[in-house]
Amino acid sequence: MHMKHIILTALFSLCLTLFLASPVRAAEVVETGTCGETAQWFLYDDGTMVIRGTGEIGTSERLERASKEDVKKVVLEGGITSIAAGAFYGCSASEVILPYSLTNIGSAAFGESKITELSMPDSIVSVGGSAFANCDDLEKVRLSQNLKIMSGAMFKGSDSIRELIIPDSVEEIWGSALEIRFLKKLVIGRGVRSIGKSNIDAVKLREVQNHSTLDFRLKEFGIETDLITWKVDGVRTDVVGAGKTAFGKGKKYKIVYKYMNGVTCQGKRPKTYEYGIPATMPTAKKKGYVFFGWNWNEKRFAKSTAWVVSSNHAPHGGDDKGAIVVMPRFLKVSIKKKSKDRITITADASGARCILDGIGVRYSTDPAMKNCKIKRYYDGYKKKFTIKAKKGKKYYIQFALYDDFYVNDENDNNDWCWSKSKVYKMG
Image 1: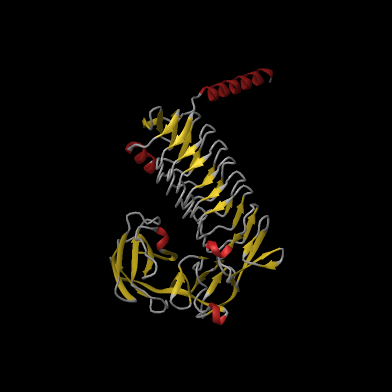
Image 2: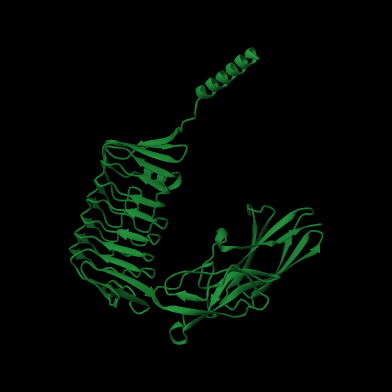
């Protein structure tokens, strides 16, 4: 028994030694290049781009191409002090790590990039105009506590940002710097002395904290004051005075559902809609039909279940009727075997109650729709499609509607409505 214990212990030790000794594969450099007089970039096979050196990161054709196509993460190491204008414009990285040696970010440096979060080290004192403009995926922002100026259009079009806290160090906010359409909360720091003209147009904005010595006049910045009621200390107002906080509540509309015969919903149907706040609509089902979202007021529709109404007006009819009429948008579908190698699909959108330019069908033996074949028509509400099929194969079929309000991309999965019931296996 003692000898058995010794042997097992020895085997365990040997296995542990081999495990610890086995090399862990390190990421390898697949491409490199210079990006300034004293800086160099390295692209690793795991999608990380590391920039080493000192001074300013400049721009180069190779850096621009690599950062747009292959990068998941950008890491600037200590020693880098400045990022040139447009250096990472359109960068594909979702994560960017900035060093404490960095003091300046040039204009449009990360414009139209894919970053999701921005954390500025407090070493940064200046940021150029449009530095983070049109970053569709940017949600969280932390500004440097030593930033003096918010440059023009700094975050313009980066509409995923929900909260913007302007640090007390900022003294000037230039024009268009605050134009973030779906901003929910805005905090103005104590040091702000001037704010340039901005049409904020934020339909979801519900809180404004003004710690500055200025009066923040909501209407001057295009903030809705008719369909959103603003109050400071419980009193309705359109001016957020120095040191005050305003809270807003949007006008509410009753939601009326029409054309619901034979329709079942997965999830609760909201009864009211507050201006500017998405109403989460359920998925609707009807036998023999494919669901395409909800129409509202007959002519316009939301193609997804996250329903957002236009920023500059209430839904048509909302002001005078006090209600929004919605209805499920369906495409009637019939799938039949025509012969040994043919499937006939009849698609009828005459009951969709919307302006329609055409109908699309795509099909594949792959559920991921790889190498799918597409048939698309732009002339009519009812179409019959015949597709060639192989015996014993299972075919996955998806549908699309095309109209003059939304532009659908035939290669974009989000534009094709999917129904698991529309799977056909040839006999």
